[in-house]
Image 1 (cartoon, rainbow, N blue to C red):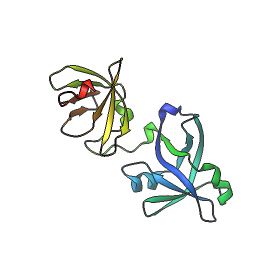
Image 2: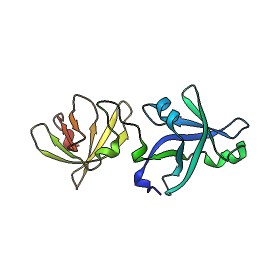
Image 3: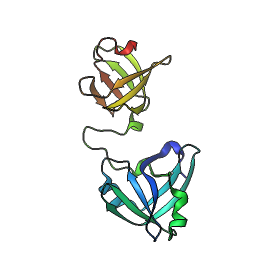
Amino acid sequence: MATAAELVAVGEVLKPYGLRGEIKVRPMTDQPRERFKRLAECFLWEPQNGRREPCRIASCRFEGETVLVRLEGVDSPEAARPFTGRLLAVERDQVLPAAPGRFYPWQMEGAAVETRDGRAVGRFVRVESGGAQELWVVSDGEREHLIPAVPEIVVEVNVAERRIVIDPPEGLLEL
């Protein structure tokens, strides 16, 4: 069975829906229709405690920006209720390819980050939400730097070489 580090969330269970045991899911993917159209098996995952439970998808359909999913063996709202707040996840080798010019954050974990002039900044750790744009957390071993993920700063992302080049404005790395 996949370890937590090998799982990628594709949706968050919001609540039961209807009388047949469907669950309302908020997609967490750039390509929700393509992802859920292909989804036959996944895990109900609680990342905070590592609990994961394999499940099979009986059906899914879209309602606005959400997906209504029916899991095999779940046929009532009462049976679906315990899944609220869990994540639907797939193993990393089951993710859809990232869109051109995009990547999954886990693909770059540990990637070298350097400035345009070749000065080492640290290693890519994770992505955090920063309101207007994503913030990339880069650690140099002693401290973490928050790098706004905007084209003016992130000059190059090379997934194959696991290397990121940035052009930080003066003072950004001293914050």
